[in-house]
Image (cartoon, rainbow over all chains, first blue to last red; front, side, top):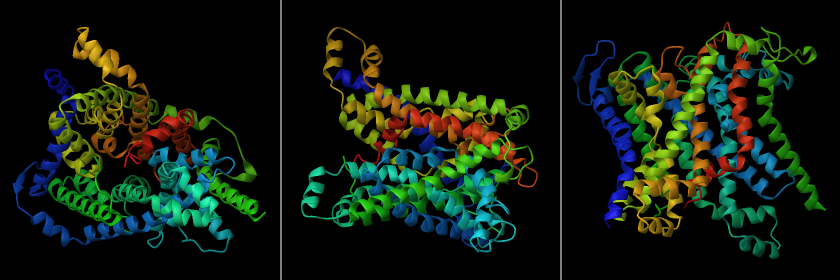
Length: 288
Length: 270
């Protein structure tokens, strides 16, 4: 017993980290959200929930929130379905499946800054995607996809789906691998083809993988930032302004720390609620 | 018959996706070798010059960004390997009643969106005087919830007998950890190292907000700020991007198995 208690000392680094870099910031951030605090003047004043009520009346914040929701609910279903389909295909042991799996994953290990720069070029006027659209008879916005209010956010969403798919393919494949082979053999004996096998055996058994993929992707997508910073800075006309970019712009760039903290906390609550709802819906219980 | 036809269709479909996945990466590399000042790759007039790579390293303090990225990623990775292994060992072998709630805090932190930490950590670094120093880039990330989670799970699966035998021989707890536990953890440490290195190398948000001088930028921050849509020299930007991305891709192709394990470690543990 004494050794066990001695071994407990090994957990000190985490306890310190938890308190200093997680617990304290999370609490401090809540406190900041209740103050009027500017970085430049340094003056701080407790104002209760005023920042929160101000946020709900701030059309720019509402726009940022709306864009974030469009981003989250626009990308997640597409990413999830495409990743699932690709994973099911790859799991069929098509010749070269290892190469496909590896290649699909490359975008998600590449720095988002790099991806955003490449797509910035491709989406520009006379860039490759722009020209391709012309060639097939579409009329892309004259100044490029990222310069038009109607296409900027959609273009960034499309890029994000492209980036994310490989990562989720990998997670679905891991889920598929954990399904006992006997179940497939039984289905094969019954003469079930690829589609019936997928619908009746694989997909129902991937329930917890689905939950994981959707919750993870929700948490990530709500925090979309780098793409916006590199490609548009929220322009044109705030059409690509997202919640985290709003927090960055208000808090870091303009120094309105109190107000930005309230926005950060509100977004935190929204993400938390969505994750909990998703866990409920997918029926996953926490396991020991 | 129809079966093999559908297999071919499937194969063709996967190839199309493969092409669209790799195209932007290839485009980046090819554009980085085009004449300075080009906007995109002109297939009828391809050129091959390494001038852009020289430009990128000469201007913009790029060598410094590169060094910063490597230095920060290596220190953070080594820190995580050592500290997360320690914590994992403590959580796995300590008294269960106390370690279980501590372990749950790590799991909970895995789910916390990082953006809530932006402003308080920014503030904290200003107050500590660590803003725009290596401390800001390194200190907050030396222990990660993911690492704690991975190492605890792995050490749970290791036999206790060796440690007990060493204890009977009179070995101290610290030397048991370094001489017996750490060497057995090699596979998990490799997974963790690869994962942490990649995340740190590619990270943008925190290095961006915690630095403001060109001496302290990491590659992604330097790259993002180098880009000015109106006046940028695309082949130079792409040369910089290639320098940031290619090592990671090669690294991935070599350590593919470990990276895959790291990514899926959290996913299949249900």
